[in-house]
Length: 289
Image 1 (cartoon, rainbow, N blue to C red):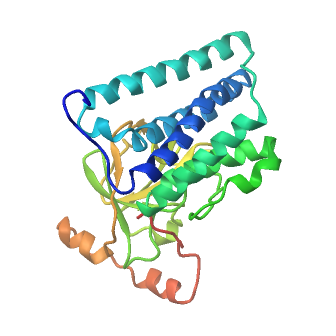
Image 2: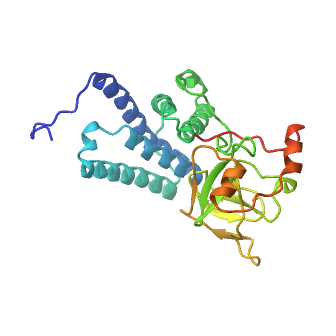
Image 3: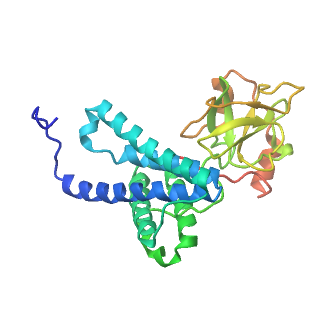
């Protein structure tokens, strides 16, 4: 690209290059830490680390790849192969490469940089991913706690909860199996489910990897709840696979707007509304966007 005369510089390029280099150093160390996790049999943690690493790799890619997409695809493939090879070897042998406190420090620094940047993009889920990995590292290397700091809010919750709705006038919508649904970050009490509607529960590794829909709240892997005026699971089944068939929207909608949009009759919510005003068990939820 340089031989053809392309340049990719601006007033912030030097600062960005320094941040990108720090992130790249952390990404290199994350390969070894993934092997440590794999040797310890922590499969889900490995998958979570891989998701985050690839997202960071893309976010902090060299600006040349904004034009040269095939070049980035090769970089991504090479990193993923290196990551996966280290994980497989550690899983097979039960041993991992030496992992030092310096490598932990490099990862924590890269996570802090990334969390700060994605906060500006209002990407709460990526911040949560950074915090979850940082928490795991800090349990092992508490001496580096000061490294994981920046312009972001630390979220160490066991599962991602910054989505859903605060009340029936500010609901969050979603798309599931070709149907419009309402999305919550905790189960909705039976008495608050509109008459004739159906409550289902989302399950998976995390909110971005939901692969099952269930009638009952699962003992593990619970990710959220949806309400739907449509039957989404056959009466004779308790669950169904929904891999790549769920999407959560940004913004708000009221129950009235939702019903008008889908040409549905407005359910009677008078009892629920009065309970909310009295501060009862109405679901108190936070927004994703």
